[in-house]
Length: 504
Image (cartoon, rainbow, N blue to C red; front, side):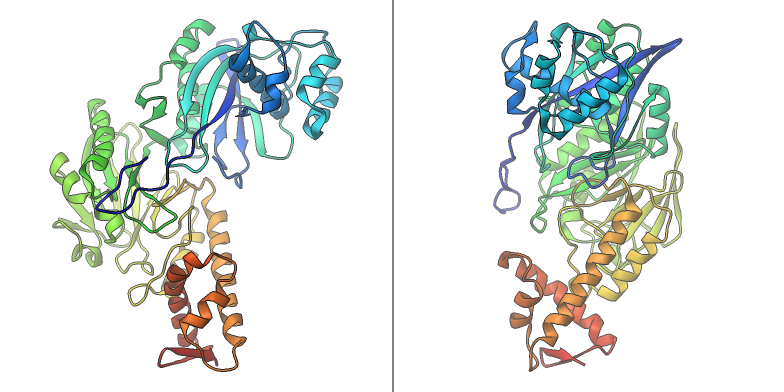
């Protein structure tokens, strides 16, 4: 992405996507098919906690493995597909001598410990055949994500007599599942899916033949240059990242479209009309399917959350809802004031009830929305998955902010949808980590302050308290440090006088 907004320099150029392969592996049942899906370990930097099909990046060594019926990059992608399928599930889709399950398990162990997939195939007279993998679409990761892949999907029938299993490591679990049952879990919010895997499950739920499925898999809707426009990680929660003038390292603010018929739009933050059109396009496509937008909801008043409100409201004829402490600073009149505890009910095939939580600390009028059915949370700037949230006094209040984080942690939350960065599949665990990090930083500020013999100002304190990050972060870190010190002064643990501080 190269465009600039409101005179700001453009964001860093998008990283080129890496070649990758994925396998939609299936087995036939009496009245349809089952597919083998995996739950990715939640700490993985890409799609942690999401459900997916076996797959991974293309390795240079994959180019050295011969493939019957293919050459060049096409063959390399097929080897990657076969290798990832074997490493992640234990299913070996290669032609040659038949092997017992214990033998296959032993070969899998050898490959996973560095033995080499190609060497294993050659040593046992096995060959990957292109005919065993049917092309089933191409998907490219959007340019605003840190980890990008140009993934080729393949459809493959599981080899007879072999057992699929997941071993500990990058994967939490794996199982054979009917596509219909998998989609029910996605609708319930207990299995998050990226667009390629959601599309695959929908296609496989109406499986009639390999040829028909492959044709439909290769023609997904709502894509531009193989990049999905609709990111519906769970039913009724669409994410539309928009380029905004936000604090680095973030470059985008996530707008959300909530609902399955009646819709709420949350935080259209881009001040650029052309950027806002990305959100308008998604909403109009949903309207063409029978959806009806009801209002725009603001989590708070900061510019990277409200920059597109005027444009969106005019284009779609929508009222704006917000907390009273946001309304007086919104760029357009607010027609409904939202209060802690009230419920925003949305009618549709999957009715949704979003409970409003007033969560000040970052901003006085900050709101979160929690879905009563799935416990998903739209959390605005309470958390970020690309940086630490800045608490900027005098409006920012660290003690209040931490109490609100603790309040969120005590709820039975599912996925967390932040304003900046990817979704968190397991919200409560990440909130615990966030609180632990904040406590660690507070202790580090207190320790740094105690290392000075005399009271010191921020110019001396910040470099020592933030010696674990680059100096370019220190101006932002200074605002967080002011907030930490205000909390410590209120707790009588620090004494502040005329811009200098010492341990009490």
